[in-house]
Amino acid sequence: MFSSRRHVPGFHAGEDLQAGAALRLDGVRMQAVETGRSRLVATAMVFLLAFGVIGARMVDVAVLERTSQQVTAPPPILSDGLAMERADITDRTGVLLASSLPTVSLHARPEDLRNARVNAETAAGQLAEALPDLDAEDLLDKLSSSRPFVYLKRNLTPRQQYDVNGLGIPGLRFEKGERRVYPHGNLVSHVVGMTDVDNKGIAGVEKRFDTALKESREPLGLSIDVRVQTIVRKELVRAVGEFSAVGGTGMVMDVRTGELLAMVSLPDFDPNDPPPVTDPSMFNRAAKGAYEMGSTFKLFNTAMALDSGRITLNSSFDATRPLVFNSHTIHDDHALNRWMTVPEILIHSSNIGSARMALDVGTDGQRAFMARLGMLSAPALELPEVGAPLVPRPWREINTITIAFGHGLSVTPLQLLAGVATLVNGGEYRPPTLLARAPDEPSPGLRIIKPKTSEQMRHLMRQVVTEGTGKKADVPGYEVGGKTGTAEKAVGGGYRKKAVLSSFVAAFPMDAPRYAVLIMLDEPQGTKETHGFITAGWTAAPVVGRVIAQVAPLMGLMPRTPMSIQPAGSRPATAAGGNANTTARGSRDVAAVE
Image (cartoon, rainbow, N blue to C red; front, side):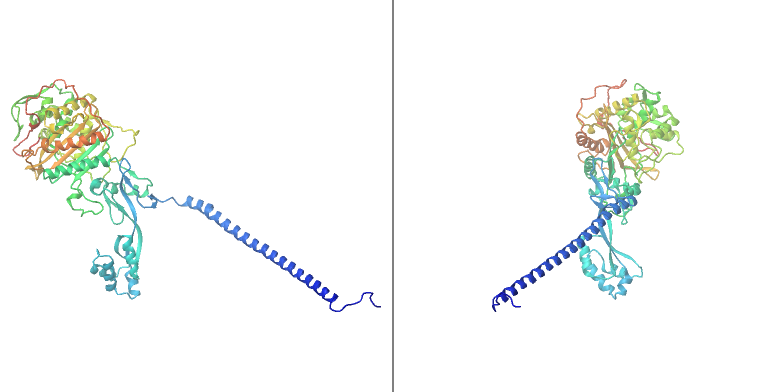
């Protein structure tokens, strides 16, 4: 059979070929699209799975592991955001007194050097070049030693570490650590103290609270006020230089709480670069040294006598002639040679009158009073460097006489200041402290004298400044009261002539005392301005006046109107006011006092 259509060669056959080719191309394209789509889906699944694993791990690390670490490990001590072994020390206002900085130390393992065939002499020379403060011979001895481990230098600077590291010497290692720094240098050296190369406290508060500083997360706040400390040190340095003294001490105490706002001892030292432990500057005269404090003790003698009830302000004692007791003769310098009332005895610093008052109270009464006042035992101050008093044993009647005017019983300046604070604050003894108290923290005290006796002592101390030997300590508007003391220094059972301790202890304002101040100069020399005098009225009293004039307004105290009340029974002074210094001279063991 034949088709009805006629076949035309070269025309209908070409169209059929083109149509077939188009169909085959569409099939290939569809297959490629399906393949790509399958691969994209597979890739997406892989990425999704990967992100799922990563997300699960992040949750595990951020939540589960962190929670576990918080349970098992306490947070580190922080200082300015850095983990430190030792907490900071601050003053009462938060000013930094001691802190720690991260550092590195350089040590070596000599065996590693030998194993690496390093020439020890060459290595020592290179290190000495990089660290010029080290001795090449000393380095050679250490690098050649048989010890497994030797320190070469502690507390490298970042630049020094970089230079040493650049030497590429095998066997050298860097050890991370911290270095204690004291921003104020000498200013609070005897209070804060210092640490050794191993960061262990070896003096002052650093030693006393060594364990607490390592365990605490919070700074240790001291009662010291850097501003007050600066004023006291500045004026004490000036006085030591002016009078060519061998040293001195100065303190300021809050009489209501026992807090020490300042404690200075000269000479002092820089804890960042301390001297040898045997250097005199390491000795804290304020808390460690025990001294016969001279006529400042007449304050305690007078308070004891008044509080006993055996003596009143109207009582009078025979000072017409020297007091002879066994082989001792007690004199008054610039003697009035008459009977004197209790106020006159204190104002004019009469040794004879003071001795007779003490004999009226008796030896047992004197010893008991001094014990209650904290004069017979070391104070519980937060320092390792606290001295104990030198107490007479046995306590005989001659001791009763000499202790009445400040000889025969040696105490620290700190004890003297705490005792005077007791006399003026209403009669309660509050232990001295270097730790800051919270404003609302109670400050319990031990009743020593009656409030009435305390009021009487405030008036008497004010009269010493207005009429007696303490005139140069007066500051207008601040009602300063106090007492001078000039005692010849005890040496080998006797006393050194013209080598004295001159001191002035004061409180202010006397109508409502807030602070007590003590300045003591060790062996001051007379000057043209003092007319050659070395007594406390000329040397220590002016320093106290300058300190109070600066500290009072700083602490927010406004000037007050003068006290107008006179103690009952007092009589006007008839002797030479501020220059009426007294002295006790005995055939053996009675020294000059003011």
